Length: 398
Image 1 (spheres, helix red, strand yellow):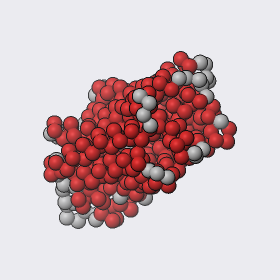
Image 2 (image 1 turned 60 degrees about the horizontal axis):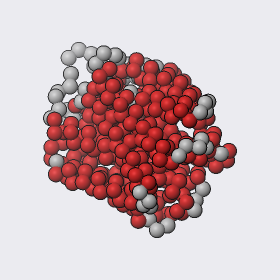
Image 3 (image 1 turned 90 degrees about the vertical axis):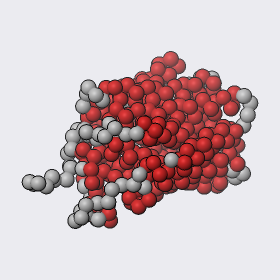
Image 4 (image 1 turned 90 degrees about the horizontal axis):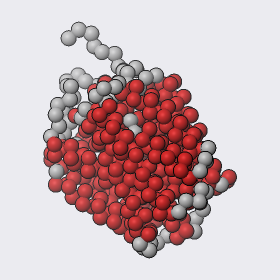
């Protein structure tokens, strides 16, 4: 049973995830303009994503230890400020290397926010609230493309879009600082319980943890590749007007948000593992629809269906982490899973960019299809994600 969380903390967590999703949605629409500004090839989206990944991995992988020492509130306040500074850095970067530095800073902040709120939510929120929490991230990711599309349609340069996003994130940072004390601190471990360093290593050594890290890697690889490359695919390979393409990229992220709202309702009636398996199968079918290139309508519908189908995976796996792996290992396990998710969100879109540079933008759907097939296989190989397979043995007696 989950104790009812304070409404104000639910609202702040939701707002925090909206702000977390904003930069992710902006980049895909801004990228064609960014690469023209700096005169770099299409594949150079990879270095930006790699910079985000390095920062993200560094902060999210260590988030369990940081939360244990400083608490969630302090972590979120400073991390959100880093993301705001990163967006401002994108806007004012005079040379390409400065873009990479801004990406690294943004990754450091985003990884800590993602892991910190997920740890808080997994311990206190029901699966329904966790799903709606991730729907708020999707809402932010859908708002980002609309902001950048509106800026470009108004005849402004792409840095103006990042200035707007930086302002929103700055306001969110002030909220986190003002409410820092409300998040509380984790309880001290009981006497005789394994200390943090050995708990970190014992969690990392479990095969079940690595299996689910692989699922997170492939899931975000598919979600991120579709979101980052859809605008380029639609405008440069399938002849769709930029304003329409930007709207549909926002629709992709929006369908992810709608799917997570629906998932929050469905979580009360269906097992989390059943929702995950069904969503991955539906995502494969949606990816096929994008891949066959049966016309603009089919492509746009497939993109929207893909976002909706992917919706349950991340929140359901996060929500069931304490049950699957044990509450005492959940904080570290969630940090590892979020790290793997970040790696997938950077590595797979970067791979798609390299393939696009070698063979043309039109092959991006093939990368999406291969990713979706791999996700189906690893999900089956890892077993049922909603179970507690691989959980530590329970102590006998009382």
